Image (cartoon, rainbow, N blue to C red; front, top):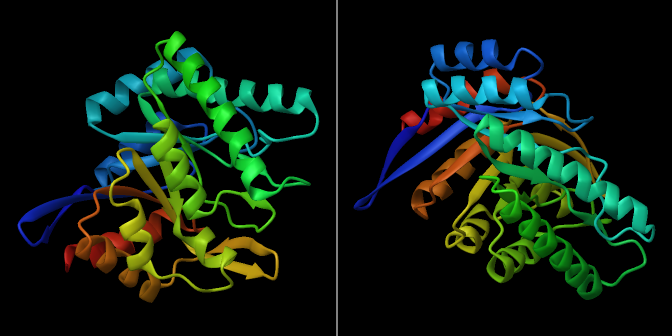
Length: 268
């Protein structure tokens, strides 16, 4: 649920919900609302599976329930590919996600933007920035009510550390999806939640992911159930640093772990 948390003189509004609504999205958001959850993320990770009509039906129900939705666009995106066709296809998938998001009232469109490949970090950044700006022009042209939110990525081969994305947000006006588990994996089991909170504090459009995670020398391997102690560290940091945010849980048991995190929030 949307939980008000006292932090000095400011009341924070933190929403926590699960990833992966599945094909029965309307039924699922009704169920989630009934158990006190007010946000969730549609996973288009394997492909955009909702039509515009179904998206409109979902959007009407989400508005009725005051339920916040986001979309995770397909995994098959690389805005810095050496193959121009792959860049074109990547932008098509993002725009299809934006179109469905507009109809479904899913404001935040989350995606893994790129791979470094043979590029140095500076060149990769400039290419991603260029493609983000072009996508934003297309969104504006189509009057889609959505915000692009490139995600902090979990593998060292992927563009998207927290510094790259905060810089990108400041220069283009895009949002950010801060995946705290990805940051943890990318840095070999190290994360300072206060440092991350301070970096994202002034980002206007902000969403997040969280779960447990397995990692190796190259970073992320797979998501695992959410460790309670890590959830406590994260939520205490967000509270202390006065961060308004929605957090999508991506564990294998996202509803259970969402409720666990809500329990922690309720005690702050």
